[in-house]
Image (cartoon, rainbow, N blue to C red; front, side):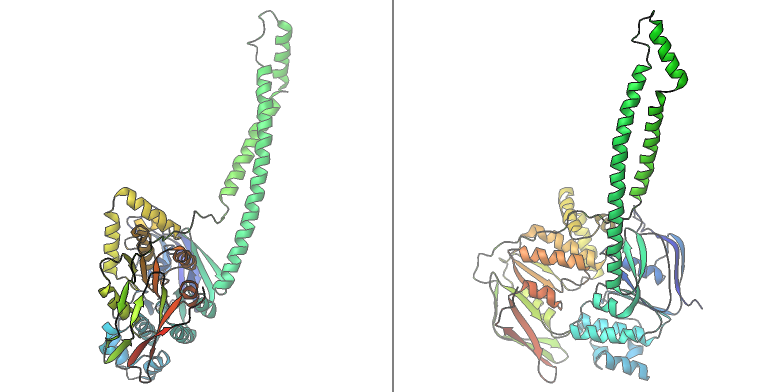
Length: 506
């Protein structure tokens, strides 16, 4: 039985690829958790799919331990072994249901489960199978703070070979003994959690920058000296030329012949040629330095100020959440200038309330909406809509997409972009809307840290009003000035929206 995961000289191209997604990567992974880190579109999910045998390498060899379980980052479909897990008559299934707070009625109401509840169940079913290798893509997306702690604790107990893609630094630091860093089609394996690995990457980049500056200084010195020697060589060539001498000036012609015979003036020309060779070698060394370079980052979601008293006013009411659960709310009004955070635990009805609000928005309200989860079918429609735009518009959208920290080339050549890339594409499209109201449901899901910061800054600078659902407290506290918090009564069947009157400091 293969007791470790092995990649040897692996290349991977999608059929439409011009450049490789992964190029000549090699590593071995043994028991314990290994994190996978990289920006959106860097190939993290592709690497996981290769490790699961769901994609085949273009070149190289992958040895996969079996049995294994792969957990997709999407929660669209019911996981395999769904009924087997819920009807299993063993202590392990019961233990996992208890640890992850999975309720007994969930088998009959998949459609009404929140994405956070679906994710917890997906992971419980994977762990219940006790695989030799467990591959997990973004396990803490959609999860509230309590659920993240539950996931972290239960994953700590897994003793097999674990490969986990995540932007959750606290999770990677708590679980991982090493991390794979993906960048520019290559992979670097560093020991420790993500924070230790990032510190080491920063140290490596500082050293690479120091060497790069030193070598470029040496190159400039050599170029100056080479130019001096070239000029001396040119002067020597002129001295050795006879064309400006009179035919009967035998004395001058004799001196030239003697100089050529002794090769005295050719030394400078030879020295110049050797100097050029040294510069060429130095150029090759400099180009091989792995120095971090970035294009311009950041976008503006300018938005527009609404010329109305309010966007919507919901009179006091109640919404059915399914399975006998309800969500009550007082009068809810959103005015221009509001930046509201909608908070509550998984399954409390946040997304349901947002969809209810969207259904009641007047046609006069120009808004941008980014949903919590974008299905494969909807992702394909978004991509098709993008390709249907004229060339100029596509170019402008791609320019803003790049400024959100992802490669346009990777987006355009992939069969189906990652959820993070699709989210960025929607945001880049939204720049053109000049919306007066921006509504985002878990906007930082699937986004890498740098992209989250870029989005945060764009929202801070926008003139549009904001309605945001998020479990990221740091993100929310920088943006909102009011909070609608959903809490439950004692039996957990009735949820209520509370308006927190005290503004949250920006």
